[in-house]
Length: 269
Ligand code: NAI
Image 1 (cartoon, protein in one colour):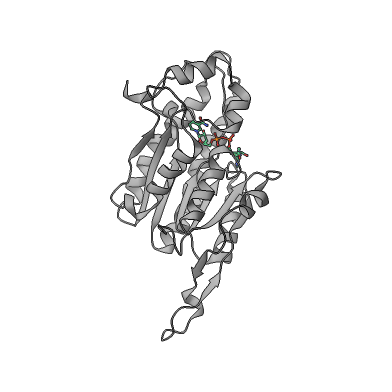
Image 2: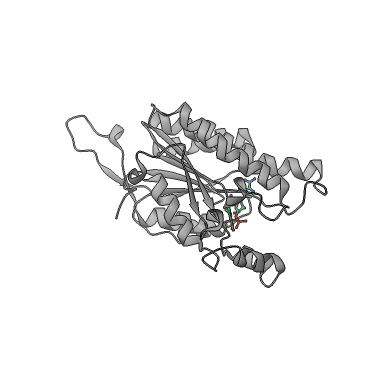
């Protein structure tokens, strides 16, 4: 299946456990992937492991009576702190310079927080909000506008079950940010409803990334994650990447402002 043939897709947090898998899945389906992450992350490694050979039609290079030539369009890396509006502006400029278009955005970058409402500090709270909430807004503001100019496309905001339910009674700032992502996605969906830009939030349950296992394997929290999941296991990054690909593709053409849960039944209880 080549649902993303001729499409340019920007993925933030591209070198993380879930982001890497999203890039692979989209590239396997024909996308030109723009992998974005913080400076110092292994962006080149991620991009060089992606399937080769995406080819992008560049109509502006063809005379009107000629078939549009195809040129190899390699995947691209972009250093981007999603909390910085300045960096969003320059990232989107570089993408448009390189490819002339942007078809989809996956707002996947995120940071965690285990603190409760009582032990959270204003400084740490602010950083979580800056990355997990403001980062998603800035992504929609700059990349979403570029998608609209391209003629339409999709935004997938990687949220969490913790954006909808109370979880373990901790991770307070994370819940605040992800809860905002859920409703910001709906508001953005209304804003672009007739302009061809679809916006949906994706709510993973607990996903077995290498980073999560490193941090929690064998802990009470890990046991709580498995015990609270009706399917009796954590999800895989590939299962989340499959949902991202669906929401970003035309198969989800009538979905906007929606919430997709991939949580092994956690929120169905
Ligand atoms: P991860 O920690 O493996 O990856 C997060 C990525 O975001 C990293 O590559 C990191 O460098 C990047 N990042 C952090 N701050 C950034 C910033 N300011 N600007 C740009 N990039 C930044 O985490 P994971 O598990 O891959 O999570 C991806 C998304 O999925 C996050 O939004 C997370 O909240 C969400 N999620 C993850 C779940 C899980 O169980 N792993 C469950 C539900 C949601």
